[in-house]
Length: 190
Image 1 (cartoon, rainbow, N blue to C red):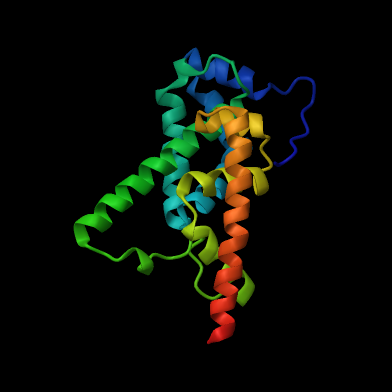
Image 2: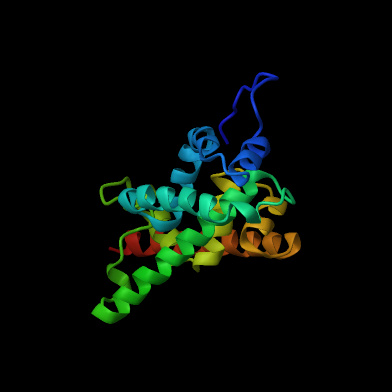
């Protein structure tokens, strides 16, 4: 998570969101500036494509405006924003899956989650293993490992209990290790 040095006069995310909720759309600019990079990184990891991630970041901040009244301060603004981003990524995956089914595309032809083709062997193996995890397991693992969210924050984002998130992360990591081992064995057999 990027560290933002705030002077005592610099408004917090929650203060800015309060202004947005009160109708001050200009207060969204500093929130966008503070969180654009982390939301873009999350969307890239969850959807696997830079172009899609850019579109999703725009969609996320439009949703912030659209659902501004729903921010009650029960959680931090960052957690609420990640929940919106996570939901936008889920919506995008459903849209893509629906189009794939309509086009009868085989799931094995899907690009790895990060959209890269020319990677080192180890990175390619990890990308392939990540792409084979169930989306909810992959999301929890990526938010914990890459975004540094706590299990409590992830629970709020995905709408589960903290205990369920711990279990999901543990199982996802165990499954990921198993998939990496299988893929490396396949690669070595070739």
